[in-house]
View (tube, rainbow, N blue to C red):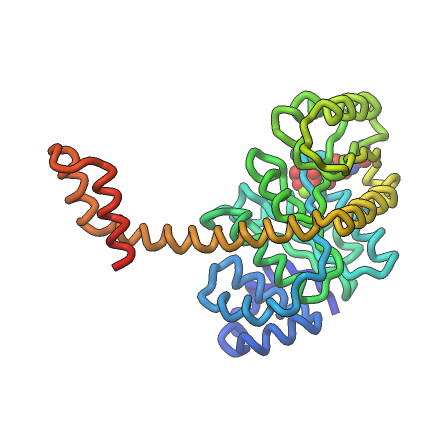
Length: 334
Ligand SMILES: Nc1nc2c(ncn2[C@@H]2O[C@H](COP(=O)(O)OP(=O)(O)OP(=O)(O)O)[C@@H](O)[C@H]2O)c(=O)[nH]1
Ligand SMILES: [Mg+2]
């Protein structure tokens, strides 16, 4: 049975939507039923009211998956590297989930379509789950939907989940807060070396990958990166992020990337960093959900005439913005 979980396969199951109960779906997802996993992730994307029940059912079965974030500029080779890593991880019999998060498009655009073609090798593998998600359109973006989708894949028994997201602005920092290990990809000829410092990637990479090492300039990117990492302030961490050169298309260097990820994992376990990161991630999740709920309530308040009344009072000098804000907040707790 094919386990490729595309958005389309999820959307095509509209009829089943009303029939399966949440406990049944959770049970089926846990046993590795690809359709049940797809349905649960669609519930996440739709911000379904059923999510409370879903997440409560999944919670006891989470915490096993190793979450690996993969970020880098558009076209640097993230998807090609992801496919090569899936291959390497399957060779050591790991169950693998792939989540391709597109922060810019609400639809699965050309890039993700390309990913599916690249992932064809794995499309019939029962132990590989591939899913693309759009994060735009949700309050909180990555911070809201991705961790919930990760919970689904985790509970479904994935040993490793690879999360690919294009490094544009905020998203690479967000991915770092989601992942146990963050891979930052660079490539020669993309001006990455200079951009690296600006974009803040020097703070987030646990393992750096200089891909397209078959092209001129890969050694220079590596040297620049090494110098910049040496200069970057990384706090008291004892982990020194390694730099690996790869040719993702041929798989060259990918085994070393997997080894470095394992080494990082061991370091995190022994140093207590894994636990710290996971607590931080849970904090972010709780905050994202709470803030979303608050914003929804704010929406209600915003629609009320109360805010207009308060604004008029402030304009007339009968009140001040602080007092008006206090009055507005009081109305939440009523
Ligand atoms: N020469 C060379 N080309 C590569 C290598 N890895 C990937 N490419 C090519 O680079 C292009 C972009 O690769 P992708 O894997 O789609 O890159 P991406 O980072 O996922 O791109 P977006 O998802 O669009 O941001 C494709 O044409 C790949 O075939 C490599 O190691 N060497
Ligand atoms: Mg891609």
